[in-house]
Length: 277
Ligand SMILES: NC(=O)C1=CN([C@@H]2O[C@H](COP(=O)(O)OP(=O)(O)OC[C@H]3O[C@@H](n4cnc5c(N)ncnc54)[C@H](O)[C@@H]3O)[C@@H](O)[C@H]2O)[C@@H](O)CC1
Ligand SMILES: Nc1ncnc2c1ncn2[C@@H]1O[C@H](COP(=O)(O)OP(=O)(O)O)[C@@H](O)[C@H]1O
Ligand SMILES: [Mg+2]
Image 1 (cartoon, rainbow, N blue to C red):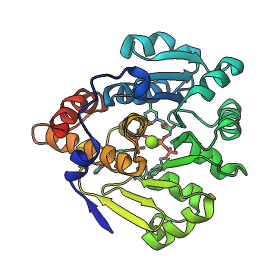
Image 2 (spheres, rainbow, N blue to C red; image 1 turned 135 degrees about the vertical axis):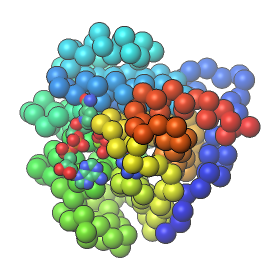
Image 3 (cartoon, protein in one colour; image 1 turned 90 degrees about the vertical axis):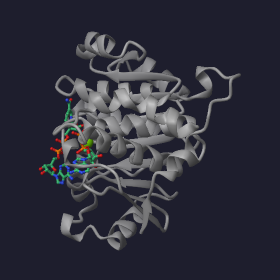
Image 4 (cartoon, protein in one colour; image 1 turned 135 degrees about the horizontal axis):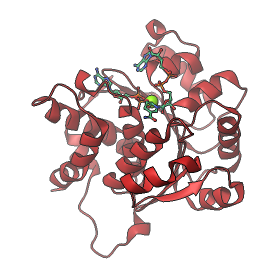
């Protein structure tokens, strides 16, 4: 298992070409944020915007509209009940992240099915949060796309059938390779998060217990979305996002006991700047 170190940030985050515009940095769509979990979609969107995604749209329950815009006015709102408009935005997106705050009701399942039907090879699909409960309870095959799965150990247990004590590298690799035709990236979140792709396994070296705060994973999903939307090697982009998320938490934890997602998000751009030099 390889250790992820700081160098990954310099490897991935490069100065921007001056002659570019927002559509060079990716269109990201989040599908999630039901009536209870609007905060999850908002935290993801905030993280993606601050990680540099060119255009971020959030498809969520309309109850979240004003809070979304008050926290992250850069994000475009889409009512997830308006299927026609959602499909149009979906087809234009480079990266779709589904599951953070999606919930497990009938609507959540129909959105997951829609995403699996519409997504194609040219798109990156991030699967997070509630999507794993839906996958565990319903017979759905993962679709042909560049897939990035971001479960915590409890969600992976539910979906993979592997008890946490049995989540060894070998077992995780075996299950992951059986889930999809093309190799998927697995970000198995825990104290020392592991990333799997094909026969490669990396272990994160950043992050700490001050980050054990609700919304921290929704924030990571947003950072991953922002990174894969703009940096071309998507596996390296995932490694960089995971490392940066933890290292910002480590810096903050030098001076505080608890780290919140909002504080992580505020530091992303400055940390990216110093890594790009
Ligand atoms: N403000 C919000 O809107 C928030 C919404 N959230 C959303 O809430 C939904 C449910 O997420 P939950 O994470 O509560 O999922 P679950 O309730 O499905 O999973 C939590 C269970 O997994 C177990 N577990 C085992 N290993 C774990 C690990 N390493 N990290 C965390 N739990 C572990 C826990 O003990 C617990 O029993 C998701 O869609 C998520 O995105 C959460 O992110 C919290 C914040
Ligand atoms: N003790 C810890 N050490 C390092 N990282 C942690 C710790 N606790 C939580 N994290 C990180 O916080 C995130 C939690 O993700 P998740 O459980 O999905 O949160 P949520 O669903 O509430 O947003 C993961 O990236 C995880 O690695
Ligand atoms: Mg989560």
